[in-house]
Length: 114
Image (tube, rainbow, N blue to C red; front, side, top):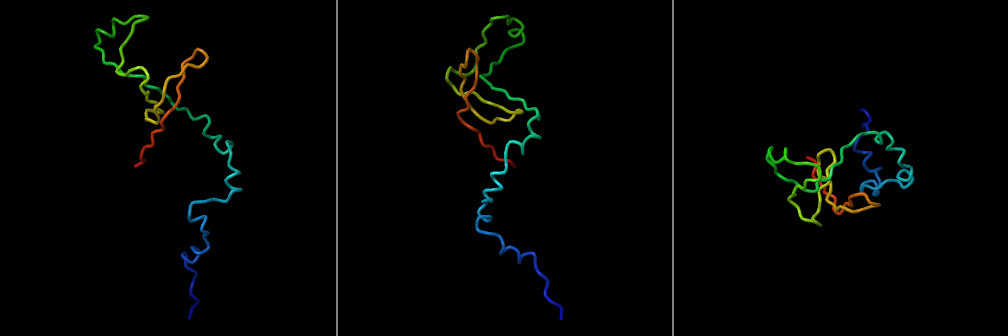
């Protein structure tokens, strides 16, 4: 008779309760740093903030001049949409920082992947 071979399922008992719960060794987690993500630093992304939208006919568009005002579909203080590579990722507010416009994210949009 031959000896029974070890099943891959025999090693399941060696997995700790922390590993089953999704936990990781603290030292391994602490070793991760921004340097681990360095390859991603130069990946270009397009960030856009939509303050509002307006529908114009081409004739109206051609009449626009420097200083023209276009009425948008949102009111002052209403949340703006923040897109990264044409995907909605957050909503926020327009803020003034050192005489420049900026955006504060107030809500992160979590989308299902699938």
